[in-house]
Length: 372
Image (cartoon, rainbow, N blue to C red; front, top):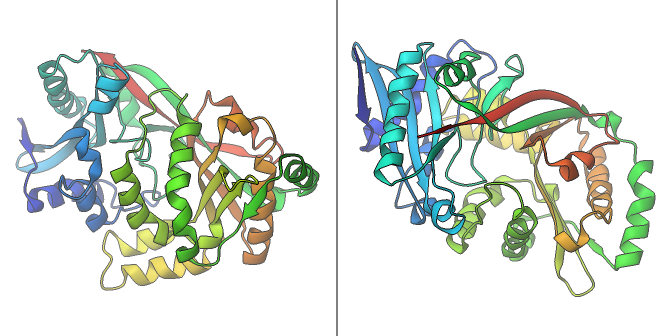
């Protein structure tokens, strides 16, 4: 018999968080999250996402052992401001038993129907900066810190239960040696002269911080037209600033300003923490933080996390300025491989940015939806 329990206390949430550790203990491609980081993200007092969202954490048990987990989420900004009557689910993990998946999803339906919502979509987090999608291709590729990894049967479970694909995301990679600077060097010089633009590079996190609010404002502006985009609030900006910016090498953050000091483009690249997180196995102490610090300084792989361009500067080759700056930084750091994190498969403008890099799509993922 399958029973469902809501995780509320810290010990129950730890149990919830640790389930994938046992489910994927023999899978070399799964990357463990930091348990403390997950706990903070689920804390209604600490995560500002809860100002406009509500979430409930459930575990499924069989013979008193956890066999699945799910988070049921309503993003009220999405419901009230965008008029999308949708309940979300995320942090979904399950054994290969469709009945367990079915019972877990029933808790999501209950929340949706209780609030007169019309459909369900997932896996998806609280906001656009959370992890998204169930992996459908690339199960033999190692994961990373900003995506979910899952077994192939997850998608089969959803389809068996009447779900259809809602949004598809692609992830791609390319070796740094594929980068041919001649494709953007001339454009870099031309664009900077024509539009009177200046590239900003940083050596310390302290230098970066005064620009971060402008970056999040531009993020909201440049991504506003994408489907299901929910703008980041001022409190979320502060939260992400404190939580993540110091975690990123300052030289991997690039900004472009116009002559009036207005931010017109930005990009954030992260060193790969994949191997460090696998060694840490969910714990910062006693040695996890050492692995992470070492990766920050020495990793030869990087992840293109975010890139944004003001709408009035899109299609004006401003990204050539960013790519030129990254080329010099990566050459100096001896970077070997570049990875792109999930982007919507129908975001042609973003995909077109990489046409000269001979990228290879190595993973696909999607969200699934169903009417309630």
